[in-house]
Image (cartoon, helix red, strand yellow):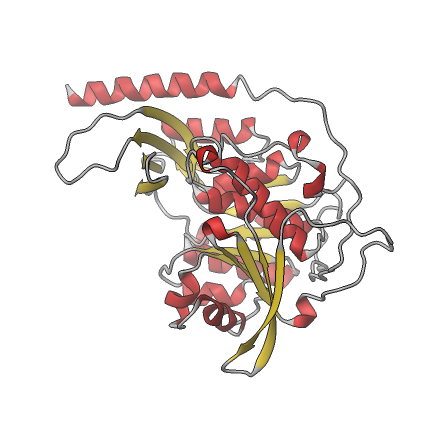
Length: 393
């Protein structure tokens, strides 16, 4: 009886989800972003020896988890052994890599995903939603006999927190990572999972001169081998400390920079915004972009400082950016906010935006996500992004 009920619920969710895919958000009038300039200019080494896409249409490959999120909204998180009712329930696509690449695709970036799902109803739902958002799904491995990944997300509407209970699928293997995955790719994003396969793909990327971004939210097996292979890291405030044993987030960020190839470490600060740390040669400050004399003021507050690395006595540049302003009542759900921020940073890196403007864009994309339930409903589409955020083209 329970099995029949589960199948019925799955079928209903599938039908509702499929119907939503055929009714995408309507497009409004497009806005033409201003040409960008900034009092601070960051030179980020995006040149590579591979023959990828053009600079104006970069191709980003993302490897990692995608799945289905089952979102249960409650007035307060339940106590142990309690029985409560949900105030709302939604079924949406999720998974760190899937969320970030969806956000990139909506910003107009050519995004391709390398992931694994089962040959089941959830697997079809996952692929259909990604394709509906414009992602290239040809690299998705659909394997019979395994379950597609899904996550129960309990959203506490009173405290604006969410608790995730993830049911993983089978990891991607090193044998499934082929050099041809990188054909035409300009930028690689890894979500920190499937670490052995990710290590192989990162090494292949480095051989081709393709920059690598890592979403480093928590320590995982073999992550210590993966971190030194990455050019850019995005972390939360806890990871730099727990991963390196540092006493503070900034000390941990400095330690991460010394571990390998990392050029810039981005850290999300929640309601306080975000920050980035790098060596002066990777984050040149001052000057103008593209020969423009007009200065384009930043829409958010920036704070620049230096940090002296205790182990190397090296001064590192730190820029902090305030969060995109939101009223407390506008924050509906924090699920996937970090994934949305990463999309803004990747857009900035692949389009050579000044580093402060990358932080602004990441903050904006994350803020729009916070306004809607789930990880993807609020992700902004390019035609609705305001001019002051500064998309290219």
